Length: 448
Ligand code: PEP
Ligand code: MN
Picture: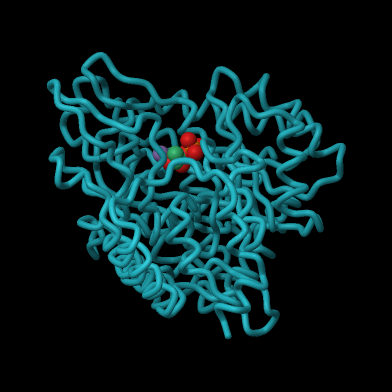
């Protein structure tokens, strides 16, 4: 029955469209075998949860909340350990407390977690020392190791991705519901950060937050209600074999939901109107996002909204602008203004990471903290000017002490990158840089 209902919901219409960035599976039967098993597994998330998130994103679109979406560029199966996951969640929760203070609104928290395993690549192959192999496309497709065997797309990895997502999500749910997220505890972690003399410039804001928390306690604030928080899962819906296989019919409404995550987005490289990704995402009812890079136009944005949210449902559609710091103040205003003038409901996020990547002199793919911050500032300026809402922040981060992004108070320089450069794809803010970013954005939010 459910397969017939999915067919009736039109979720296979994407098969007629061109799908960019898909692996060349060597054995189509093996893919069919795995995806038919995946069609039977329990959903990772529930339609009702995705609906709650849609409402929260709608609030962020109106300026009544602010979105924080963060996590790895590419999650790795081997790094789905309790420590890594806990550190990442802790970092997101710490950032959220700081942002709550600046925005005086709830923070909608989404991890690029529990499913961020598929990566679009600008080249199909990678050459090292004269050897050319297929590119690494994320752990859901192949392995990063530079051997011929590792780089062959292996469909068993679709099933592995499901199981690793499931155990990651289990920890996300446990940590955010089981007392770990208690406001007073998260606040105490932040006090530890601000006590480090290097971060003296954030001391005043940290002290203000401290006073606010103590005031709440003295005024009889209900801390019990603040012991648990919602942390939603999200990833780029890139690998359509996987996303389709995790799609289910919601028994309450008969609508299709992609139950691989609460929120899914279409990447900058796969957002063409007649492409398979836009077609597939038009058929599911989750809240969704689309990345918009510097070549996007107001026309593109309007056409995407018409395809993906024809009923103009608030919270259904998020645009994630990733223009690059030098361009955001010129490229973004015409798009924001067109969307505003057309009366389209969109939640606007800034991704200040992907337009600001470069290769350092020593050969590391990196980004500068100040450039990232500059794009965020530009994003806020554009929205203030247009009278629209800067709705949230989308960043690549880790809870660990890596050295991948240059700058920050600890002033990681080119030579410093080598110390602990661990990412297999894009450079991430480390724990301290993430908190620093939250303090900076908190200031911007207090003037929003
Ligand atoms: C990403 O979010 O890791 C990514 C590839 O982004 P974009 O689609 O904006 O390039
Ligand atoms: Mn990335």
